[in-house]
Length: 579
Image (cartoon, rainbow, N blue to C red; front, side):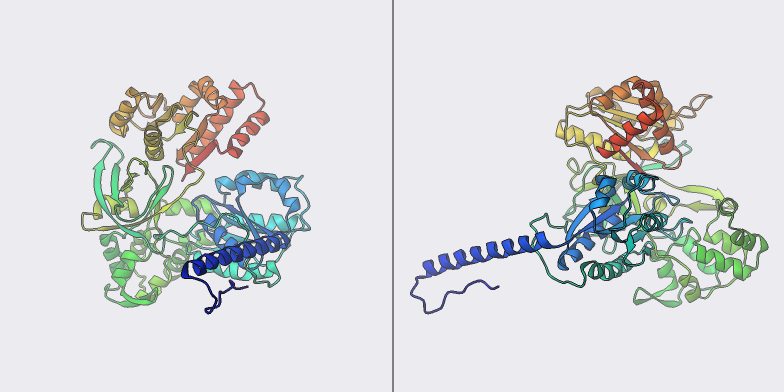
């Protein structure tokens, strides 16, 4: 349908002609919207559920929703924490898009729904048609395990798999788009009609992203641990002035590093190359040296490289570990070793430049929790990063990105970066509600941002921080800032746990138990509970302490405490940023 046109010879003045053109255009728009709404009401709904830890799955879900709308489907996009199991019984079409967290675990926002759907009383889903896209990283043993689990479980419950699951490695964009292009037409029966549904438009893609990072400048790099500390933690400030970028407290900054030049040179020598060999990389010819500096992961060995080294060396121990399937023994063998260690261990092995590059994975960005409020620092983003340095196998080893920032970046170096939003890990909209923050070590980063955010909002809600590290004298980072916040009444409680300042080690979870009555009282007042830091030990210990405190102080059974915590999660009042 086209907008009605006024004949050129019609007897109207220019003003009358303009008024009538506007009138007809408005009528035309309303007719189109009405027709689109009616067609949309008759169209089938497709649910697109995402499980995400860093935001990638949500981005793909929005791409799938846009494709669904062009094929006449009404797309309903939700995080897995936003939907109840009962809703599955009314679904006809379902797409699951999920990352895998840690060693085969569900992302935080997917765990509760997964626990419900894998239970014995999960509903029959024989009326459901589905497909799964799994995001993962082949450097982990349980590659894409969360997606695999969802795919298998939905089929077990009687759902019909309309297209095979697709498992994506770290470069997920192309296979994800191919999956969308395959599955959406099948779900829609081949229809390609665009409907206007009046819903909120999908968020725009940011100008700067993983494929197009912003070339920022580092303006501050200072040590925040003492010189004699057993750790090296640094505070960075990165200018984003003029970029048009913005961020919220709780978001992450992703930094694309450059590999250590000395490590690159040593690897080139170890494989028997010169570094000036020209090889095709991403559609252009690059020297081996340039490729290893900026395009490939060269520190930790991936499975393909490890297997090839084992094959070429013929080493019985390494080959035995790879064929045995004993992950713990292989992990112990690799502990402290990097790619160069393995190449030096078997000096008889040579690789051509082409052979070596073919065995490497693309260089990935590193995500850091932001330690500043975008409202307080709109032109700058702050990071709190522990530099990874250790001695092993008679040579120094360094973290890729942490020492790139610490050692390689100067006033003339670009820091290629982009933001990853974390829409759940946010200061409460209600400024009167209390917040409890547990962030030992560099886990304090987002909570420094939270406190700045509460300060600039002039929030009346109480703020409580649990912080700790090894030693107070050397590792109490941001001490002056925190004490100033205390004096000003912004930080109402600060409980510290420095594990090595006494014979018996004390951790943040111990402080939680000590002050359990007040902690539970804050939760009962509508308080939010945030955790940031180590996922494998601290976060699990804190979770156990939280359950124990709630059970003891609320006089609840173990199951009732679990239900209480689950309700906190559903209300987005118990949120973690763990790694």
